[in-house]
Length: 193
Image 1 (tube, rainbow, N blue to C red):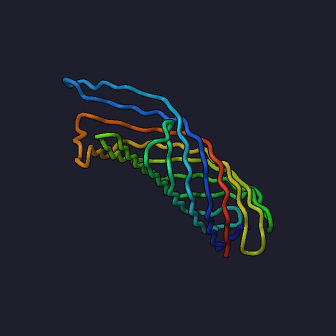
Image 2 (cartoon, helix red, strand yellow):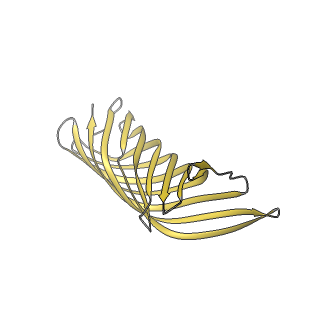
Image 3 (cartoon, rainbow, N blue to C red):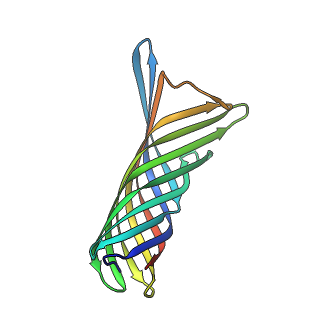
């Protein structure tokens, strides 16, 4: 499935459940007051992965995953994007079957838009992500394979910008960070050449 000089390209769908922690900090009279809320969320992303075999047992790649993120209220319009580097080890590497393990290290961005009766908000978060993945690939021919992967992923995304009714809000005395950790499953169609 993998060898030195082999290119890998895969397209798929990834669904995950997440535990979330939302920390807010407000500067009042020179002191930071903080509040933390725990909740849950779900995401569906569409991974695009591109890799290159550096040896029979190792490939280095990149991933880009646009998708949707739904918190427990599931009422907001939102978009999430994950991207980064993906080193991959082939624990088993046969012609028609492979067992793989990967590390994902990159950046994440989340945009949450809310609209209520007289108020609309637009919050933008960005930060890092880290993940561990393992999965199998079944060869469907010389060029095509079906991949199934399980993944643990964490994100740490501070609030970078906030708009209220279309006007930018000054965040100099306010900070917020959304942290997530979750498990997901991915199904992909993979090409190698």
